[in-house]
Length: 328
Image (cartoon, rainbow, N blue to C red; front, side, top):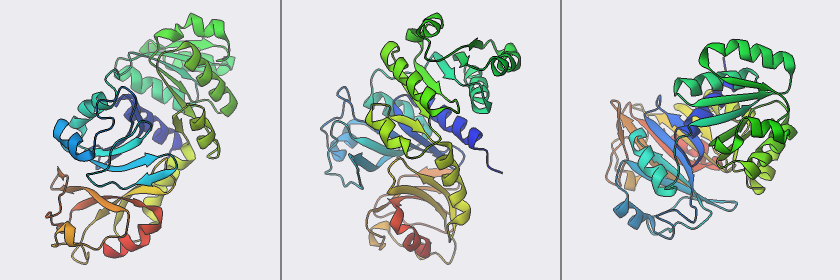
């Protein structure tokens, strides 16, 4: 059973807990984190090569890919980070705060969040945020739905307001300027967009926009709404693990349409075991980013050998999936 609302809420919680992230996926029950972080003008490592970044920023992490414009680059150590790049980093969860601060020194976990839309996802998210002691204001235009949400969330001290997200007076009443995130989760894409643009004007934090139309993602990102969520695509990524051939454990479709992350389990029949990674013949633009062995995460170097029963995380282009499945 797959719940798009549940996947959406989990994805947003990952974003909230890694300030500055534009995409957020966990593997191995949260033991391996994939985050997409933007190189801004305040980024400490802008202009640095990946080798010099490693000298300045220590920890268990690997830059698996860089999205530059419409291209996804599988980088080597000489690749430099440019303004506007989106950097895909694989890391241990305890490295996330250090990475987040390096890419955005001013990024902090929000203390107050405004949610637009009191549907299933909106109420689920409000509960999860209150568990983290984050203040929540929920805006819902339908009177009956707003009353039901107020009743369901009464014990959690969530403020529920009935009204339009395009009502500037209403936004002023809920102190939009003090909210560090605005999350538009209604089933109306146009209202989600308008509410997020108003928050861009009056607020001081991150707008997260849900759209039910995959074709809208590029349009929304082009008008500076970088964090766009499509529940259908989240569900697709979740379902692909059952469709892919071979020992595929999980799949994550990334914002870059030509890239995905696959997690394989190895067996005695896998062609990649007991051979140094540098000697493996992997498809072009494929990178072994992390290995989980006996509940311990490794960022492998060229001499690392994959063993039976390892979980192997690979960043690759979508066209390489069949070749990788054959290897595993």
